[in-house]
Structure formats: C-alpha cells, structure tokens
Image (tube, rainbow, N blue to C red; front, side, top):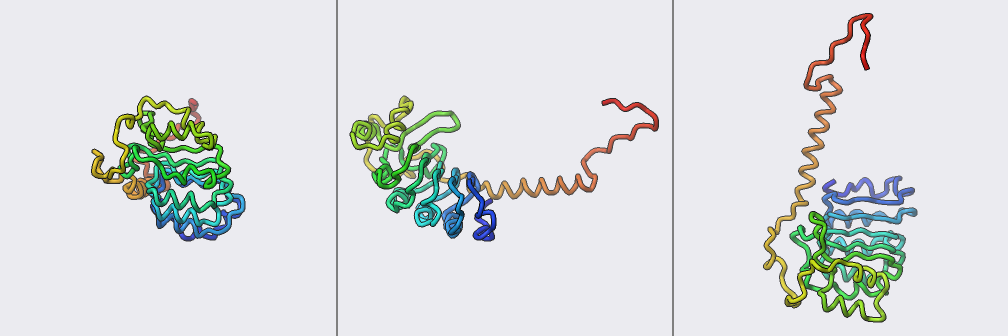
Amino acid sequence: MGSWPTALQDAPVWRTLRSLNLADCGLGDADIQSLSTTASAPRLHSVSLAYNSVGTQGARALAAWALLPQLWALDLHDNVIADDGLTDLAKSGAARRLLELDLEQDCWNPRARDDRKPLPSEVVDPASFPSLDAIFLGMVDEYHGSRYSCGFPTHVREEIVSAPATRPELVAFLTHLETDGFEDDEEDTEDTDLAEESDLDDHDFRTEHATRHAQLFDEARDFARRVIDGDIGRPPPEAPEKGAAVGV
C-alpha cells in the first residue's frame, strides 16, 4: 500500500469487517494515526500490522484508538516500537479484551531493539493486558528458523519465571523456548546503543517495498492491457481445418 487511504476512514466495509490484515504494507506512524481515526467497526476483533514500520507515535495512536478495547488479537510483529511507545501502549489499559499480542522482532530488522535489554515491565504487567492467553516477545531469525532472545536477558527471564505472581501465559512462553541460541548469558546487560554496535546497515529494506510494488503493478497492468488487445507476445494458434478432428 505504501500509505493508508484516507477514503477508507468511514467506508461501509467497517460495518461488517471482522479481521484486518495489513501485514507488510509499508505503513508507518502517520498511516497508523490515519487508521486510528476510524471510530466504529462493531465486528472487528483482529488486526495485523506485522512487518511494517510502526514506531512510538504509531503505538500511541493505537493506544488511543477507539477500537482497541474490542480487539482480541493484535499483531505488531517485526515493527520498530521503542520502549516509550511500548510503555504507553501498555499503560493505556485500553486493550482489556486482547487475547493474543505479538511484539516479536526479526534479527534482520536494522532497527530492532537490543536483545540484551529487558522489555519495560509495563508490557508484562497483568494490569496492562488482563485477558491475554498468548504473548510473543524477543528476537527471532525467521530466515533460519531460530530464536535469539525472548525479550529479557537470561537472569531476568529466570527471575520472572520463578516469581509466583508472574502471569501464566508469560510463564508458558518463557518456559517453552529453545534457549540454546541465546547470546546474552555472559554479556553485559547495561543499556547500549544498538546502532553503534550492530554490524547491520541502518537501511530499512522495507521502505523500498512500496516502490517495488508500484513497479510490479504497472507491469501487471500493462500485461493485462496487451492480453485484452490480443498482443500476448506470440502468434495465435492456427484454427483447425473444417471437418478435422481436434485432439484434447
């Protein structure tokens, strides 16, 4: 998409829409702010914004969205929300019915958070998302099918799991992970600037998706036009002679 169409703000589709999948649409904070101006969608229960560039301002817009209190699932997988945005989203207390929340990031995202830095405590506070059945945190390598972190350094994870007041869905997530690939066991967990330490380029490859999509769309439209005009790049098949048998 590249941007959120303002014409959709009060479109009739919102009256019956149950699930909104906007994964990998090239959306940023301004687009989420536009999306959140939609004030009524009585049947909407699931929203996926995975693989976009939602940051702190986008998270704050979601926190104030009139539809957030009715959602059952919110997928923010592999976005770029900083701690202040995550904290504001959690502290809003608006996602009272949310059953599933995905905040994982991919290691190939150059703006991913430092996996040695624990997530804000507000994110896992039972008061923030009181109805959760499942939560997904940390950093994964989806290309190779592995996990780098769970959102907390090892010593913090162990403390959370052993604490009697830890919410059960968080314990379930933290105790069913393959931790062999975790790299924080002996590392310094003090706050660091990931941009200074990362070997990755700070270029976000997802920003090129909208341009590439536009090119492919133009090519597809041109091909469709040529097919309609009969220009398919090869001569048409010869018609069989009258009375001749046609094989199938």
